[in-house]
Image (cartoon, rainbow, N blue to C red; front, side, top):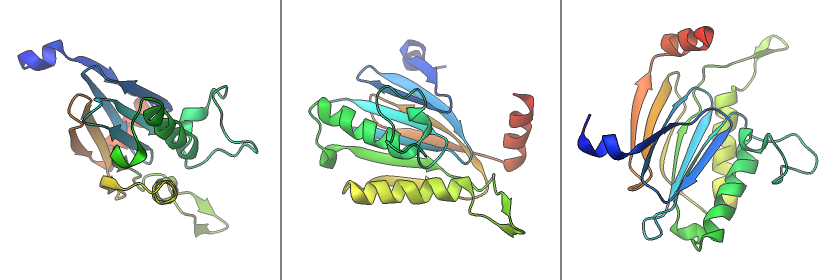
Amino acid sequence: MSHFLKQLQVIYLKPGEIFFSKRPTLITTILGSCLAVCMYNFSNGLAGICHVLLPSCGREHRCNNSCTDMFRYLNCTMKYMVWSFEKNGVSKKDIDVKVFGGSDILITPQNGSMRKSVGKQNIEMAKKILHNERMEAKIFHVGGSFGRKIYFFTDSGEIFMKRIKKSLLQKEAIEI
């Protein structure tokens, strides 16, 4: 391990969690059908990442700050992330966005036919939200039938990604 990594705080982001910081941190997470949305602003140094499970909250009045499940849903979480950057003086146009995940590992049958996977639903919702917010992702590494492990360096906005075979994701899900 390099001298730099020994000094860097390392955090594992679990599903339904979010992290914001100006402090140099290495965030890791493992994704299947879930999405990780990483946001970063170079001049301000603010970075944020979420690990969401589902595309949207089914609640009638949408998620708000008192909702305990808020960060499980992409629509609620991305709204919160953009608000957090703006609250810290960063305009939407100055946020670098990178999106990962959305694999087709959870396809569920419905009435004898295959329904759209959770991964595909998450990807469509991310595209819709980015379009509605007039934002664009610099990296949109989504879909496929493999999982991903990402390493997000909050001090530089750099992300390293490792592909994970579907069989390994299934094995890990069973062991948990």
